[in-house]
Length: 384
Image (cartoon, rainbow, N blue to C red):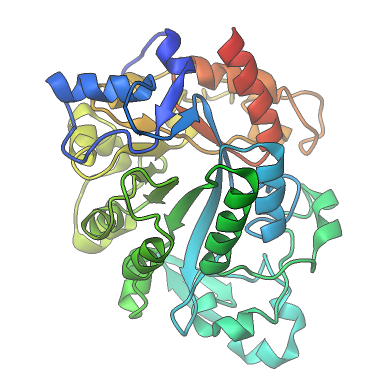
């Protein structure tokens, strides 16, 4: 990928329409102009989000066990612009909020002797895992479990809340968002990911139709809904595009990786192919944005320090695509080397400095485990 200089201009600090473009408003000419207008907040009739937008990654997961109503509520109370959910199914077809279907490290399932015989080994998207999996439990059974901190060594403070919250169903989250929206007098934005959709479709537990049904039930199926849909599998986003008008985002992992649906179908393209102008043009035919790793926006050198920005922001914006990269975290172990402070990998580093570097690259928003930090950094950037 090529190199690009610092992005500038008031449109990068203004406001953002939720449904930035229609699926056909992809690449060039009047459509690109319309996309730029939407990114600068001039799209009529669209609800607005600030730029840079702060997405609470799995809720306020830097402070509470991830994907719990506690983490979602804390993120909203902090002022996060959007709160993220990852969806996996239960055996009886309900959608629940977990980052993975393997719940070994995010619940107390191992402490439940009645479920000891559910421990098993599976291969999920080419990776062999041993543990307990949501698709082997009914929703009622999952509700007997309690959520726990996923990385207690890094975030020991979060273990205070182990056992406090259940595994939430997505319908519970939709109801929560409705209640909070009425209380606050404005919509609660959600960012919803389909996890391992090809794998689950093979089990007869397709995610997209179940998700679309719930979105329609709660009025989040329209182009101006306060919701983004996302997936690492472009095929899942294409399927959702046929079911609902809700804005859609293709997630992009490391440049050398391949989406699992590509692996299954024999599509030879990698993420490196998808972030080329041609690949982005293809994505813009069925999605309104991309969610790349931060390293695809500004790569790290061999020493772990930030290099120069790639052309990804410029190329994506030229095709009317938003960029919401992932994931910002405050701890040294997750920051670029030039923003780490001290020798404790779990201490907070210069998170504000790192965020400013990413914002200056022109991204439209960022996923963060620490939304309060990202919100302050975004405010500083907009005032600068």
